[in-house]
Length: 271
Image 1 (cartoon, rainbow, N blue to C red):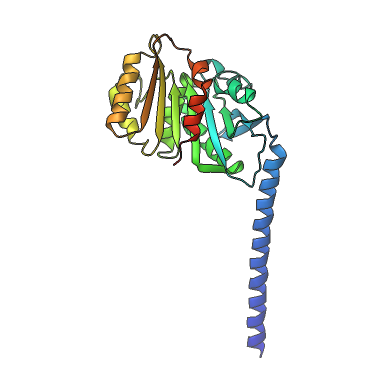
Image 2 (tube, rainbow, N blue to C red):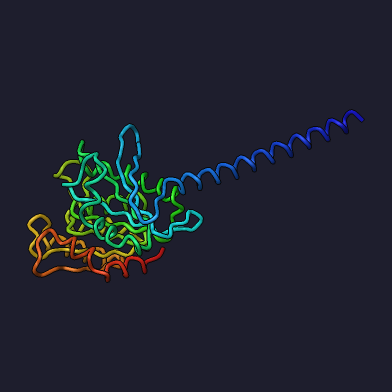
């Protein structure tokens, strides 16, 4: 009899533990949803910070006008140029895609992420941390993992290539603007040629659509180098579009992000 009562007691205790775990899990999920809702301001930019291994990264999120944390959302990650590095959390939204998103705040259909790379240290060394920041945002805002889009201008385009390497096959599309593909194992003497870098990058871009933008007269990023990258990606079977502005130099991003055709193409891509 005592044995039977003990068995019943253990069973009841086990059920209570399971019930408490389920209740806690439900509470945490509700709490997370509430936190996102509280910090999300539909149709507005929200400033946030992300700390990774002792380094603080400023970033801003844009939430669509009809943002609902219960829905899964496409996410656009826009990476800035070298002139917007810092820790003010503002400059990275004032050039490139930021002004376009702001001007279309009532209708922009995705969550947009604007990380800011600190001025300290070699910029490209921050790519792993930016990749982890993106992961955190995807979890936080209920991002649709089949519709993650990555773009960047100049230095930000270099970062876009490198962030894509941190997550092979993660992004539905990447769109580097006025950016070289810089791959090196050490100092500048180890840098791969554009063609070799393109072939190597193709290994991590399987299933990712690519649209590369270039100014024909860019003194910083030679068009011949970008063409070699495009040819190498295409040869490897990557879906790559290439636009070269015959009359343009380096600063072409207003033309790129101001073109509705770019956004139609971007949002049509899925994993």
